[in-house]
Length: 283
Ligand code: AMP
Image (cartoon, rainbow, N blue to C red; front, side):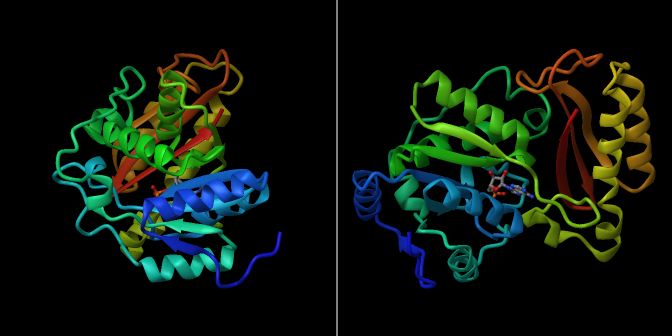
């Protein structure tokens, strides 16, 4: 497949995007959607690289207002579509889908997807309405683009599980794949929000990954999870974090587990100053 350095083609009109997707599919190619909110970094580009490996890479860029709470960072969330398009060109993405708010939420829009259970704990407990906003916008993006496959980062592990649930429950017929988290050399998971960190906070931030790695190691053999998690919270708070949650959970249901008895994940959310960081690791 030849690719021009001038790619990706930018689409803001849904009919034009669908015509391109239909043409690729008619040519026997697989279409892979990578949903993003822009401010693209190397973590996002790993998803684009995986998409290209599998088929035609369509990257959506949309800062979705409905997944931000009233006191969250929607208005200051970084936006730079031109820089994003340049990164996507370098990464060889095939198409960028950049709808505006009026396209996504025209007057009269009244539908929301609510997922029970999975969305109640972890980030869901601290961000009411967040996963409903995510589930709704991702459902809409999947219906717009109609990809064969959609890729999501394991960095947002609860989000990945919620999307898997929605797609299975609503028979959406798209394959959802998770992509491992890309990190800085010191362990900090790449995030568009890392740019909010002051130099002091940036220096403290890798502690989150270090604590998760230590807990994953400690509980792997079947040790009980409560004491290592409590020690991890103490360590993070001593380093200046305000911890929202730090827990070992079943990798599928995300229910907390007292001891490891199957695939599990250690997950945390913690704030450094005004910046909220999340991370997780497999156990
Ligand atoms: P966002 O723009 O933050 O909504 O992220 C778009 C997609 O990129 C989501 O599927 C994220 O999970 C994924 N992502 C964000 N950061 C990383 C990272 N450090 N490594 C891998 N995937 C990531």
